Image 1: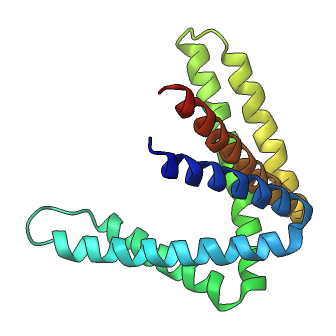
Image 2: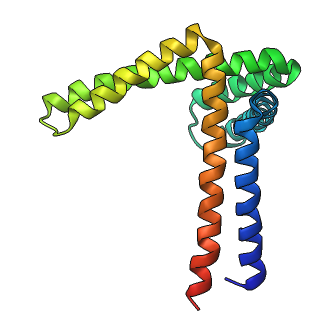
Length: 175
């Protein structure tokens, strides 16, 4: 890796750590900015999925689910961008439902793993039950879900920043 590229990776790492720390210590504005980002992302993804459906429809058999997902993504993006405060509430509720659903699926998977004789299925069951509990807490106390989202995103940025800085030092020693 060239020196200029390494320096860019180092700067990106520092920026991500700073952004992660900022996210964790400024949860309100962080959640609103995250909602804006997700809204733009959903809008773009929805448009691309709709384009993909119509551009591939003639040459090959394309599932209508791609069109349905594109339309839903587009609508969710518009909802998140139209009223950012309502969008944030929606995002928090969707996060709570996602955690609940993931916990239920993990619990079902744990019993399937038990029936298959997989060792460690109890850990999967424990994580599933914790997911169900956290999902219910998030749905009935949206502030907990909002804090969870901010901490999750902030931690992600910090970990990715550390990864970039480690890459800077590791790649430098390869020469």
